[in-house]
Image (cartoon, rainbow, N blue to C red; front, side):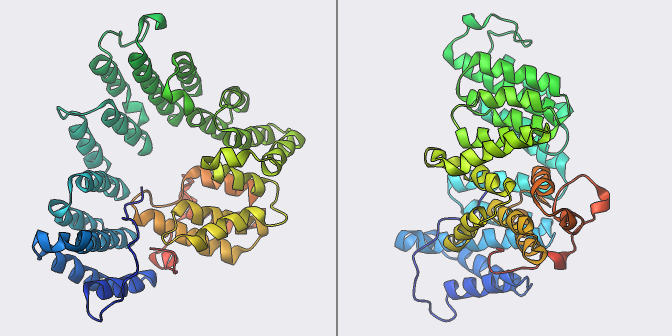
Amino acid sequence: MNTRPPAQPARRLVKGSWEDLFLQAQQYARNYNDDAIPLYRRVVEGLLALPVAQREAADGRLQNLLMAAALDLQGYYNVRDRYDDALDVIAQLRPAAKQDAQEMLDSLRVEVLMLAGRNDEALAELRVAAEAPDATLGDWGQLVMAHARVGRADETGPILDHMVTAFVPDIAPDQTMELTAVTDEQRNDLAYIAGLRGVAALERGDADTGIEQFQRVLDLGGAYAQNLHLAYGRLVLLGRYDDALEFITKDTGRPVRAGFWRGVALHHSGEHARAKRTWEQIVTSNAISADQASIMEYVLSHYYLGDPEGQGLEIVLRGIREQRTVPWTILALAGLGWAVRGDERMAKHNLELAVTQRKSVAEGQKLPDNYWFFMQDVGKPELAPHLQGYFDTGDPAAGDLAAGDLAAGEAAL
């Protein structure tokens, strides 16, 4: 979740202005210096004290600055593990935000609670939102995915049953009705619920139920059938390579993504030559031009081939150079790219930035376990013990990163 507003056109700054103070705070934050905090607070509290009309003048210049400063401040608090302070900033900002921004802040509050390990509170707030009179099927879906994210996928059964009875009332909770008897809208809703059941099953390690539910998604059709990667990516991580290949074959809408995972499944099945040919076809064909959303898998295909000419890493580095705020996913890819080349210093630098950025936007304390899976596959083996601490591997021996290890750099916040 990227909570930052779009970049504003460059302005000529006046010393001591709100913009000047904001930029000073950003400079301190980029160097992991807590002197950023009083400067951010001065901007946030000063702008909140202004009349709404004054903040909204000039196309909302000061309102946009308020949002940017407050979100930067809460993000910096997240990086420093000061979650109560981050939540206070969100609460302080919410009354001054517009409706769509208030919804974003409510979602951000839940993310910060999960980042802080306060999962019961986060799930309770999502439950309240799902039970609101105007709640949608997607609100309940968010509740299911949040349970899966915090390792409580085994608790989702009653929620999913409720979704069927509340939103597809003519269908029995066990979904035994003949598929020919349902409308297109019901098919879409049932496919969505089946996909969520599948994800929950795979997250708790029940591959057979996950496969059964995603097969139901295919039988039902609808929009959710375009998300088969939610099945086959998890199946590969669970070691069910043949089952993953069955779903990969059916993912015709995203050829680069499907091709990359086909190579990974073949590689881990011991069919290394076929895996190599699959990745080579991806990087030498023009498929990426029609599948731009799979750029990550395109880069990873280069990495799995050893990236001998550095083409994959150069794509990532070019993206870093061209973006004002770099997503943690791009920084993590850069870390992987340097690990492919065996450059421990640069791998650590980019992984540190990725972890910092991921914490700042309240998406997690470390990088997800699938990135560790990729690191083990493509990185130089001797680097693994030195890099494991950046990833959520579920291994206590990996240790936690000290606050100083997350220190900064220009692209961090």
